[in-house]
Length: 398
Image (cartoon, rainbow, N blue to C red; front, side, top):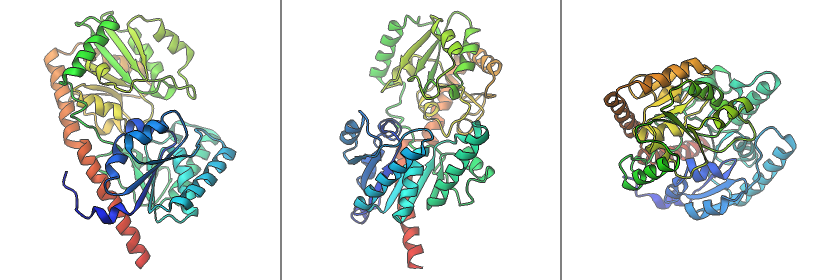
């Protein structure tokens, strides 16, 4: 990767990356802080948890624990903002960059109070469009406050950008980095041809009693109500006996799947719950199609990772998904919240001839390699931070 040789100048500048929970850094943003630490003095702040020590070791950077609770909790949030202010006064970073809603609220407010020169928040998805009444209005005003305190607002994709303007969240200039997404995909790692991945996939199939001739659908993500698990349970229940469904992801207790849908899935022998997996490649490698029937997304990593593994994707026609999936080229797009539309697409993929399915998989990997390769994303992030510093210095000099 070609980088400027002026790393000594940037290395003196402190970049603080903030997420609500360590999981965002240990999974989605994994290795990004380590890379950026070659050019800046990177520090991480996230809620305490069992992964925080592992995070410090994996990334090799200074890490601080600041409790930030998910959901609406004004008293707890005020405590978090106060603790973040104390941390900022201690660190005096040049840049603070937050991901996820609560981290944005806490760090952008604290950053504004402390007058941090560059305050960046990335919207990885918007919660309020699927909410109603007072809760929706409250979430809208929280997002507006985040944008007001930030010097730069980054939407993860075009759909998020359009919603931020459409709902009047901010009138600031919005910049999508590259083609969208916050991490990119290491296509060397997410390769369907790696011998270890293939061998683990065969072992997994044997463990799950899935015949090699069976058609396998795979879902990757938190098992919660906004992921469309209800529609998935209905759609899959009507498929032929030779099909299987692998579910990779932890149960989300904050927004659980309804009991009826969960009972239907759990009572079906052809449905396999794997729970959270640090390495999802074996599950993808023994599958034929990825399913993502979400109601809302920012820019889902699972469809990028599946595409890199040469899997076509059935996804809902929502922000993020429709920025990657081209119908009948590398997957299918269906109406969100429609079990019938999802079932129809699953049947279409099931009845597709093997050659066409493989062709769609090859198109999927080619798309990821050309638009979402991680090496290129990291280079764009480095240039993005440098440009923000230059812009901040120029505004101060004026």
